[in-house]
Length: 216
Ligand SMILES: C[S@@+](CC[C@H](N)C(=O)[O-])C[C@H]1O[C@@H](n2cnc3c(N)ncnc32)[C@H](O)[C@@H]1O
Image 1 (tube, rainbow, N blue to C red):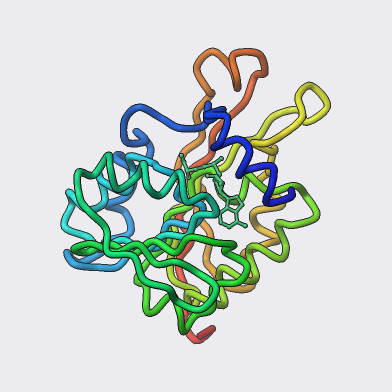
Image 2 (image 1 turned 120 degrees about the vertical axis):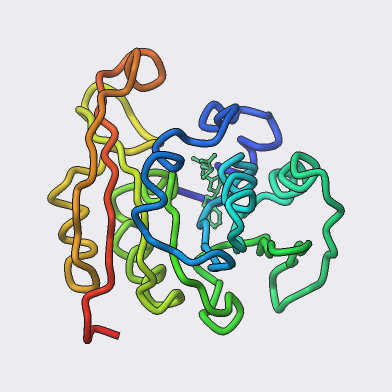
């Protein structure tokens, strides 16, 4: 998926993926990560998700990466705080208390730039990418975060019925992408009420990925 695709989506405000409240699966299952307060959670492809505010409200710190400056401006407006904006290499980093968002292409974020993270929350990031890019994404994500544990939400549906994004990522693929780095547990599978985009039967899967001891 070209970066221009997403930038145009934000410019045209075609952001059906944006949810009007914190994701219920995040709220229900995030505690399973057993993070201490003050842990730093990385949210790849964060958009202006209300999940960021929810994580902050739980006493965590948040780091994010998002291509669209428009999205990040709206994210901070929604949080009701004025970001400090500094150049960090080829990125602009928007920061406020407990939050740093890197504006630019995640694939260019290094571990050094990102800094330490204790966990990853992936909602609509892996599934935003077409088949050919998901290997690269999972490899890069585990590299820059030092294989931090993650809560991952995926969709599974008949890709011949509807084109992505979001793309269908079957459970076998999740295992193939992450089994070398993590112990994987499928925590829940729920039918998407009304179908995906209101027209395609789909299941949402929640995964808990824990670092394999000795794999760091
Ligand atoms: C489907 S949206 C999900 C946004 C958010 N996670 C949510 O749940 O509302 C995918 C987001 O990823 C961003 N994105 C896509 N490719 C990216 C990349 N290579 N680096 C950083 N952000 C990217 C897009 O701009 C878009 O906001």
